[in-house]
Image (cartoon, one colour):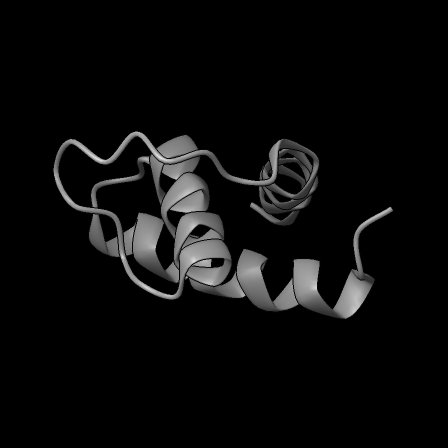
Length: 66
């Protein structure tokens, strides 16, 4: 189970990024989870794996918060 505080922090970042990226919520949530997991924003063709459960928790919470 993901840490609720971490999920909330990433949701806030994802929503902020999504708002400035034209509403691309899935991509924005993926990017903030990637940054959390790897310590840097993804490059254009970055295919490194992320924590899928954390991503899904963040995406679900972000969709609920919209």
